[in-house]
Length: 463
Image 1 (cartoon, rainbow, N blue to C red):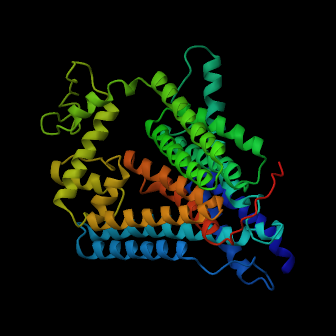
Image 2 (cartoon, one colour; image 1 turned 90 degrees about the horizontal axis):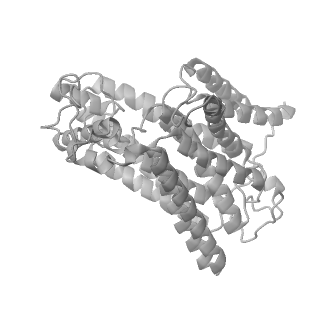
Image 3 (tube, one colour; image 1 turned 90 degrees about the vertical axis):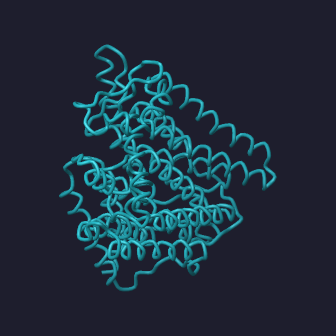
């Protein structure tokens, strides 16, 4: 039985990698469920394997305890809100169980345990600190699975381009653009954290050569531009700003001033690349602010209600509005109105905004406001928003604290949270496959960030 431990470990890694690869692809739910059941079965077998030894870790740190306490508090408030204040208690309870408990907490718990089982850094670390530069096989596997969608995108777009005409920005091999944008951004975040972790700490996150990480940053940057989503660009820019500030401060604090300047300059250069490329390839940016001014006037401009009866308005310059931006901003305005009317929450679920608009304006078929943070606030009330902000702030503190102690996963934790928080402001990400993928990544990252010993030693690159 003991001989089964190593094969089970690698099989678990393979299964979770396949799940991340399949998650954004429509109509793969039954395949993913089978893979999840297989993982649970293997975890059960692992539990009863005799003499399975785990690497020695420090007891849970304050950086772990406080965020978990706040997570428990958020969950408790959600149940209280559903019981006392939800408009439709049954639907709110079902969404709470499916999206938050299973899609968030259980999925995070799953990769938390996989990170614990599959970690082998301590076995290879020169001083037994458990923070060598070899990286995590689990993070490597799920990151490469997410990155595969960037390759899939170019495999679809480049032949179209070769057949003549302009480059097909926004054309996708499956589903809508944001289905690819989200996993590509996740991979981009891990790659930049891996390179920055090595430059700052001489410690790695990924189990691949540095040259490949660098190449994959270039490819994923191009893919973020090619998939043609504004929220993908803005969330990448937000992560790069945080990266420059965090690594620049760390290096300056440790008297590596030239390296600090370089680590600030490199992300700023990438931000300029994003800005120039997206402005030149996406005409929607040109009239964005004029569209904002028109879209917030939901009483006089009612195309959001029914565009067949109420035509899209013109901007103050007489130009047509950007329909996508107009609808998103109008829906956000309506959701803010709903929060004012239901400060203690409407009931948990990604579709809280749709339910509110259906009730108030008899407009059916609508789901999200396309701002996840507003969906979350309307669903869980202002207390839920306050708790989420406190939880996010505590995670940021945890990541910053362990990063300053020499743990590269702390930097990854900060960047992953910055990426997700930015996307939730700009799109509906508190449910569905996006939230589940975020939970799968965060469970593993949070474990690796808060369970390591710390060492001031910096190990040489083995690329």
